[in-house]
Structure formats: structure tokens, C-alpha cells
Amino acid sequence: MPEIRLKPRREKPVLQRHPWIFSGAIESVRGTPESGETIDILTSGGEWLARGAYSPLSQIRVRIWTWRETETVDEAFIARRTRRAIASRSALAEDPEITAYREVFSESDGIPGLVVDRYGDFRVAQFLTVGAERWRHAIVGALLEDAGCRGLYERSDGDTRALEGLPSRTGRIQGVEPERPIEIRENGLKFAVDIAQGQKTGFYLDQRENRVRFKSLARAGELLDCFSYTGAFTVSGLSGGVDRVLAIESSAQAVEAARGNVVLNGFGDGRCEWIVGDVFVELRRLRDAGRHFDMIAVDPPRFAPTSSHVPKAARGYKDVNMLAFKLLRPGGLLFTFSCSGGVGPELFQKIIADAALDAGVEANVIEWLGQPADHPVALAFPEGRYLKGLAIRVGE
Image (spheres, helix red, strand yellow):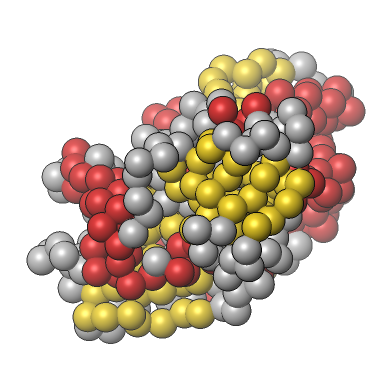
């Protein structure tokens, strides 16, 4: 088996079970490992540490499969881990009020680069790294064992895949072609999801519990839904008692889907105002027009895909939240989020605090928000905690 040796004193993260080895930590490579091939990881002195998938084009040069020297990484190993991840979501699978959730979450489930989301009786898979791609056959086989799964669809089109030197690939893998859209249930609400064309795998499953909390805190008044996508926070607000919603989204196609979701849940579209445009531009227009709202949701796309983008992302988060604070009525509630892995919880809170200061408002965090249990975070892999959120009440 090919192997790498780490530079002196670079083994500590591996010993602490962090699953990534960056190119700068590697002293030498023995053999000529292929992309995605399993290799052994040794200390500079030759002691065995772990075994992982080699990625020659990525800055994350190795993603670790196992820290057990006696454990063989083969099709049975990959299939076993896939089944284990799915089985760990059995409570969600048995809940009739939740028909869409994450079944496999990459490093946190011991399968770096594999994401699998369940939408009713369909699965959507993303093979985002060369390691996951190399074991594609074993993964697909494990995913198709479930008799209740009518079809498996692929959405391997994320930017992580491009960083691994892999081309985008989407389409049906096996089974019947999925309906477009698929109707899902989420805690008493219904949503139509396009798994073929929607963002990520079609829906933001990681916000499921935050939408429940948002609904519980909603009250009569006006809601501003920024980066509204297909209207999940809009529908949650209406369900919680909001009178009217102004939603801003850059995609006209997403706005049409959002309109449909409002009607699907029994709310008249006349209670909603839709703006297709740039959130930053539209918030300034609303400010200049003297508009104010009782609740605001700010759930932007990822501003920082890599750590090098963090400074620019921080400016973006501060700008959009400063404008949101200025648009809130006294006593208003802001739900604000970051899904940028490079922006940690402490930095995110600091950014939002600076935004409140610049907006001239006093505010309190009433709740920290994050990702649900089907998006687990391995203790040794804090990067898995990518979704950060704050529920904030501004002063009267």
C-alpha cells in the first residue's frame, strides 16, 4: 500500500482524530498513489497513524478513513459505514411528520465527501471527494438495499468536488425518475422540492429545527424574509401568526416555488410581497423608504467557501445584518445565520455585535441556533459545525 510520512511534529491532529491532512504537513510520498486510493499515514519516524484517501489536487491531501491499523478499507467497510449512518436516523425515518432529512453527513459519519439526503421515497447523493468517488459502487449498493427507496438521484455539483479535480455530475443513478417537484412534510408544513434543480440537494434540511423555533416566536406583524429561496421561513412565519411577508430572493424560479409553497400550506398569496433582486440593494431601498418590520430572517448562501474568503465574508455578514437591524421595529426579532465553515461561532457573534453597534441599536441574543441531529458534529472535527445562528431581540 502506498504511504505518506508526515513532517516532524505534525502528527498531533491525526492522533487527536482530526480527519484531514493538509499538503503542507506531508514530508514524503512513497509509491505513486492514484486519486482516491487508500494510503497509510506514518509519522516522520515511520510509526503507523491512520489510513485515508489520497487527493493529489486538493490542499486537503488526505481524508482519513480509519485509525485502526487492522481495519481494511474495502467495499464491505464502506457499505457498513453507509448502513450505520442511515440506521442512526431511524427515529426520523419513523416520524410521519418529517419525510425529508439527512441520512449521511460526510466526515461526521465516517465517510468523508459523501452526503445523502432523503426526500420521501427518494435519496439524493453527493459524491464530493475523490475518496467517495472511488467507492461509488459500494456506496450505491448500500443505498439501494432499502426496499422503500424508489430511486437514487445524484447531485455531485458542489464546489468541493471542483477543488478535488472532479467534474460535476447530476442525474438519476438507479430506480425511477423522481417527480418534479417532490412534496415533503416538515412538522405540520408541506413543501414542494425540486431535487434536480434546487440548491444543494433541493432544500435546506439543516434549518428544520430553526424553522420550528421561528414559528413558535412569530406573532402578528410584518416579516421580512431575506434570501428567501423557496419560502420555508416565509411559510413558517405565516404558520406562526405573521400577518404579512415581504420576501427577497435573487432567483425568479425560486420565488415562483415559494409562491407555490405558500398556497400549498393554505395561505393566500395576497399576504406576501415578492421581490426578485439583490438583498443588499433591496435592503437599502427599504431603509430609504422608511420601511420597518417586526421579524426579519437573514439566511444567506455561503459567503466564505474557503478560509481565504473569510475577510470578505465578514464584511458581507456585517453589512446585511446592520441593514436588518435598522429595519427592525423596537422589540423586533432577528433570526440570522451563517453557513460558512470558515466563520466560527465566536467570530459570527462578533460580526453581528459590530453590526448592531453600527446600526445604533441595543440587542440581546435570546438563543443560539445551529444544525439538527441529522447533521452531527464529530467531537474531533469542529469544521462539521458549519451552521451558526442567532435569535436576537432588539431593545424597545
